[in-house]
Amino acid sequence: MQTYVDCYPCFLRQAIEAARMANATPSQEWEIILKALDTLRSLPKGATPPAIGTQVHQIVREITGSDDPYAEVKRKATEKALAMLPKLREILASSDDPLETAIRLSIAGNIMDFGPNPDYDLWDVIDKMLTQDFRINDLPILRHRLGSADSILFLGDNAGEHVFDKLLIEELSLPVTYVVRGGPVLNDVTLEDALAVGLDEVAEVVDNGARVPGTILSLCSQEFQERFESADLILAKGMGNYETLSEVPALIFFLLQVKCPVIGRDLGAPVGSTVVKKGIDG
Amino acid sequence: MQTYVDCYPCFLRQAIEAARMANATPSQEWEIILKALDTLRSLPKGATPPAIGTQVHQIVREITGSDDPYAEVKRKATEKALAMLPKLREILASSDDPLETAIRLSIAGNIMDFGPNPDYDLWDVIDKMLTQDFRINDLPILRHRLGSADSILFLGDNAGEHVFDKLLIEELSLPVTYVVRGGPVLNDVTLEDALAVGLDEVAEVVDNGARVPGTILSLCSQEFQERFESADLILAKGMGNYETLSEVPALIFFLLQVKCPVIGRDLGAPVGSTVVKKGIDG
View 1 (cartoon, rainbow over the protein chains, first blue to last red):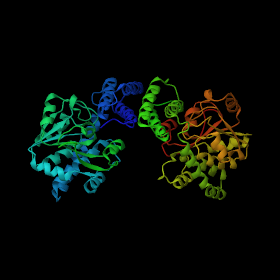
View 2 (cartoon, rainbow over the protein chains, first blue to last red):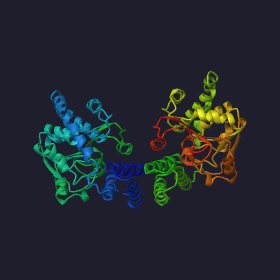
View 3 (cartoon, each protein chain N blue to C red):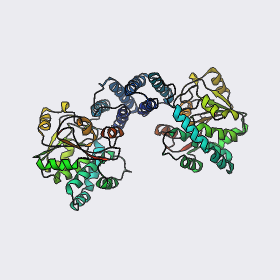
């Protein structure tokens, strides 16, 4: 997905948010915002939002010296998600269509990146995600593809959400490789986060070699690029993966909640909607 | 009030909003956002938010060729406010304390700058503004000052809101000079807007000579600066006037709704609260 002008205010907002997560001093905040302006000014127009976000978060890390400003947010989101597991398993056990339910729960888990907001009732979100119609519904095609695939490459998104992904992986009757980011960036899931919740018990866990809040193939390791190209079927969670892979021809299905009006416009689905969308080829 | 880092995303958001009001083409939108980045990068740190906003809106005018992007928004807000007048007069007529009620209504009118949002029920806002406690309440001091003043310099804010200001002026038993901006900027009230609702029937109407969404004295006409310095008592509506005059020693009272968290932090009053605040001297 291309970057829209509307993304620019949001990059600055993200820079400030990350600066505060990293306990930046006021003068560091100013340094960060000015450097972010320089970066925004100098970037090529064709960059995807996560490509720009990558640079913004790098600025925050460099200026604050904090390598992982979202560590605490990720820890709390994961803890919250783990505490929800027993009830989530009950929901799955009583479902007539465990695959669809597991997909819906995995998409619901994407809301964990509202992590620090204590007012957010996650069960309300889950109820909504379990019942509302998919705004884009390529689930029938996905079911069909699952029937003929030998394995799945599963691109993770946020920490916390990855606990929900584990449930979905348990419902998939195929070998799964779970892909995490190459290092901490935003609240995205890393190898450490994945191992901490035992994702390695249900999938092979690999990192993509890039510290990017999405999947920019050219920045990923050679090894990951080869896995991507030879993948039988790819599931890609969340907005960052959509933004970076929406124009890449691949047998890919995007599973996400629309939380941003710009992405919503790109997808043709309003904020708040749930989407299972097949990629542009496959 | 100083500019905070949090204002920077908002300047870009405003640039995009104004660009769309001016029917900018997509390539004009990009030109505007890039030029706004240059401007933000080069500004001195001490500038108030309206000083920066002034430049952002100038960029939009220059690139789109639209001298008054908010003309239609202002027209609609004014029309809406005029349609509310009969009922507002009834509220005033039945009030035990018409001065306080008129001040509350005038502050409520500040919500008119949510103009284009049709979902916004203005009567709900008015009910709230008529009943909720002032978060900062210097009304007793203002009443006292009104008793000893000979005249009032009344600094207007937005179009639409100025209809509500007219009601307040009618309740003040002193000669009033109503001050408008030196030219169209944002949805702020101009001479034309003021005359269109007959503000000249209840006050002398003057413009301050500066096309700024606030009152930056150094940019105002000599004539206005003299009026300001010699004023007996100043009423200043809205956030833009607060942002530009909060540190100017003067016998001034700010009447406003807090609609921005940054200003709220500066004032010590949360978003949604109503404020009657005496300036730093007088």
